[in-house]
Length: 172
Image (cartoon, rainbow, N blue to C red; front, side, top):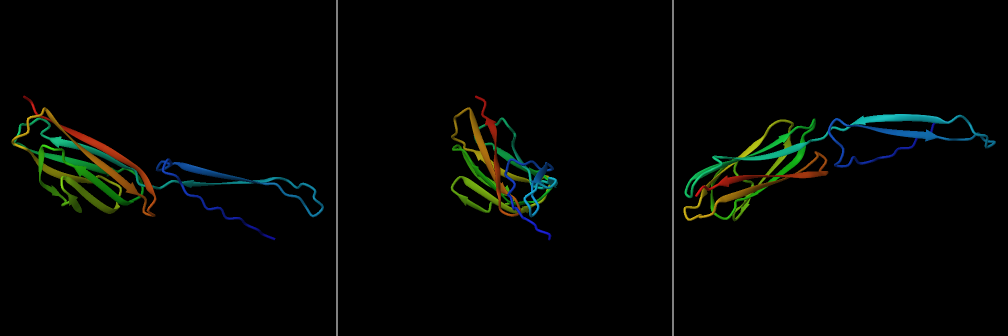
């Protein structure tokens, strides 16, 4: 008779896009008289197909004065072979900056914190721009702006998030 066994596993976040995962099985068995029969072995391979999101934040210009306007660009590039189910970006403007606008508009805001949520993010380059003004009364030497990115597979499995920052220098 033919018998089978099914084992279901979940690929971890540590698996890389394009990585080949190999599963091996060995079957030891006996006949009805409990005499060992020849060992049987088999393998099966599967190739990981997943999103791989990187994030890089830049600012233009990177040196400015109080009262000037700067533009932050958050590049979130999917270098994987599959779409990401969700991509969530959180950006909090530092004290000393005032929000002017962004493209696309944030999904929602909370004071100086801006959130973008995207679904089905295909492989390729993507970006968000955020424009802010250095407060006229700011008297520090720099402003640091951070972007936090989290993402999932199409099945909703969370993958390792990413962080990037950009520094605006305020020369004396």
